[in-house]
Image (cartoon, rainbow over all chains, first blue to last red; front, side):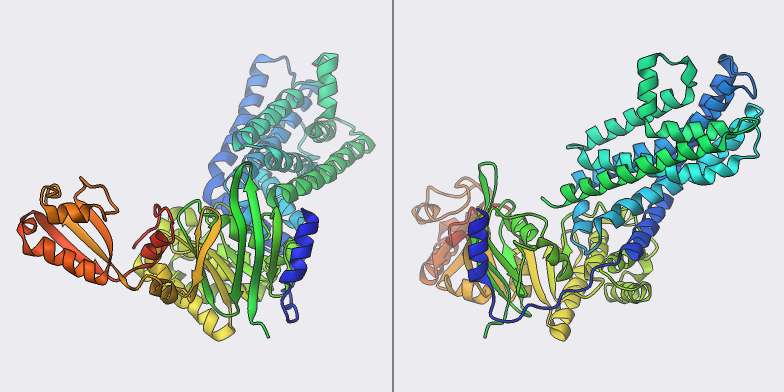
Length: 271
Length: 317
């Protein structure tokens, strides 16, 4: 087949010089344009879901405060607050982004980007970055509310400035890859929901209380490392080296997940 | 010396057992508005999706402005502006930002993209809607906003897949004026997919008629119609049912394209026979059963029918 196409291409070649190609969109400006457009989308349609993400996490913390033996300031309390905070990131970056890309792929929306000279990574990173940004207000509100509720220090909440982008990169990359690889949009939604449920169960429940096989699953979930880093920072003497290691794992998974998502985008856009 | 913008040779694309494109060959000249006309499922969109680099052909060759798009499909985005049928990617964006972002992703600087956005919105009469998200517009307005995005950032070739679907006449005129301006001022080549025969006749320089994955004819609209210019279309509308017990009506019944017991008959007849048919139904007792009749010169739909097209799905509006 390829040979035939190549031979025909020779016969079909026109008799004059090829027209100049318009320049490609450079990576950073394209990334910025996609990011800005995605933020504008949030104003139009995503705001109710952002509230849902926050209320869900606050609800879980209130529930845990009431029914579970999570003493204020205890290790369990740190896990609950850190887990609920990162859950906001998982809800938006993983679940909603998987749904978005699933829908875009199913309804031909990828054609728009695929017919523009834009680097695939700019589309994926722009959308992932925007979805990670959407989580900022909910994450901050959840962390502050949880810290007050469970008597945890607010001193080191600045760490959110690292946890949100790094856990956001890992979870958004995963969400984008799931959405772009799912053959049907319903499957993308399902995968996103399952990922979020896993982040909920494995993030909020302290590791010590989990049976061994589930603890292994917890170690495999990228959100875990964001949860661990944040939980450590609530302690009286945070182990900053361990925090840095956790965040480095998030960053590493983020790079891999976003690379996988970019590959999935190319595959989905050009058939 | 060729003035070719796009050369397509023996293009074939199958989905399973269905040949969506079955050996399509076409030559599109620079600066012309070239149409692909045919009903849904004729293979028009499959053809333009290969032209825009979205779909790889099974075999065949596509050359666009001297570039081999089978070997380098990624070059398509740097040569042409494409308007697809879907607006999912833009639906939740405000109209202005949709045009500006698209221009930016076509490689324009931030300032140039804003200038382009303002110009194209003004040109299409969309400035008052600039801040409204596409999803909150009517179907026709949303389509117009997609056209704005497709035109934002100049390209030597435009590929427009049914650009005026759902638009009112004012919006349609704005689109055709904008397209024609680019053709006249910049020599832009336009490849247009349509299933609207009236639009095809008024807008296109040349048209390829497609049916079941093949090009069954390619000429100017006038040239195509000249192939059947000895024919006239007679449309008869009966009050209730056709009086087929009358011999003059029974004779015409054999030439009817529609259902015999339907109220609406369409006859494609040589001029002299058409004159005789009209005389027969208006002069005798059949006239009492007749509600209305029209005599029209052939349209592209008639050409399509005479070429053996199935004739369903073409739009006259």
